[in-house]
Length: 117
Image: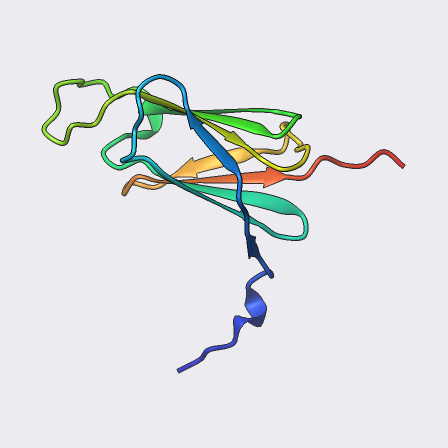
């Protein structure tokens, strides 16, 4: 079995602030990692499609992740949510981008802000 971890960038787990705006939604799980150049934000938003999830960012290092299911009386109990993720440093919001898999895994790539030299 091949077990060389040199391909993957060095990462460290972070303690970031994640706040619910409105009712608590414990079913949305969020994890954040930091590499040398960017943050990676992972959110589990099962049963939501791409047009039901929105990610916004600001240079101060805040991400706002919202979800609005089209069918509110769904079998799984999925409700609307809004989570604010406060990152520990400034970010480049113009290069921030998000992808959502068919299985409800949201990945947000958040580069650090460029320092003016």
